[in-house]
Image (cartoon, rainbow, N blue to C red; front, side, top):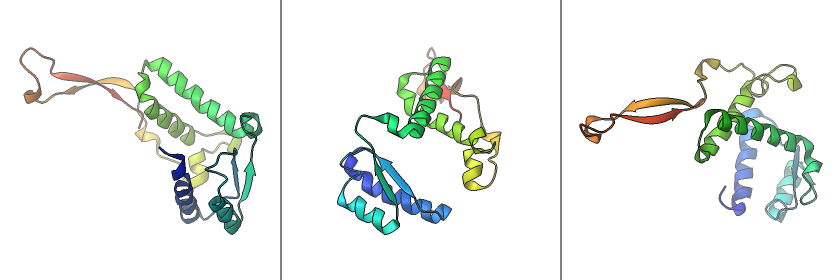
Length: 161
């Protein structure tokens, strides 16, 4: 999301996806007092859907403990991935997606040993697509892209997904 003004459209798209895909309605929407969350359009949408709108104090993340703990969990995994594999910080977005994907496919004691994916979709994900996170690989360059004395390979990184 490049501009906060786009959030209402993104939220309504997500809300429709949740209704159609999982046959559930969003029960509660918790946010800070940012202008993009407190517009009249949002209040009208919440009233129509019966969604409870809870607002938190500004600069007080302790009020939303579960979200802050989950955010910290994701950041700690990303940090360990970056440190253990010496990945440049330009790949931060890919590392975050990898960490969240991994969290969603591993079983959790919080939901009785099921993975979030299993709990949401109803079936266990096939783990055969997992790969070693960020290993070095070499890609052969076409002969037209290198000279007689230049390298014939390009060093690349392979990702978990």
